Length: 115
Image 1 (cartoon, rainbow, N blue to C red):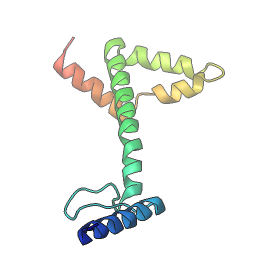
Image 2: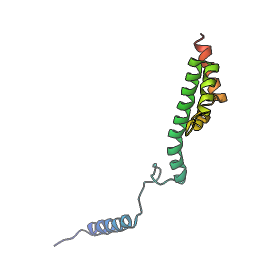
Image 3: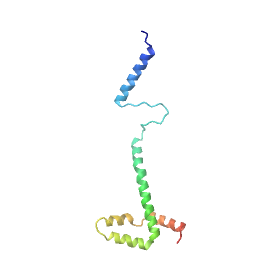
Image 4: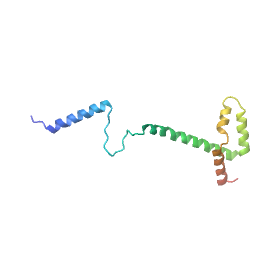
């Protein structure tokens, strides 16, 4: 029976690849985007930072819209009343205080939608 020498070479290469895969090694072609990048930790940080930044931006936006609709004096009165409360109310007051970004969002809404 005739056996092709290229077939033996092929099976030996497949065997080496399977052993390497079992050890956890991977194979990627040169010039392609690979799964293993040098900044792997930075990718994980960005996966967390993007949603966190979105939540903070939405929170500030909602605070700005509330400040615009209820007015500065009413907003401050409500935050002061929240600060005088018990339990988690002071934490809510700290979160809802009118910071410069909230005032800026409220001012932008005032310039676009004057009362």
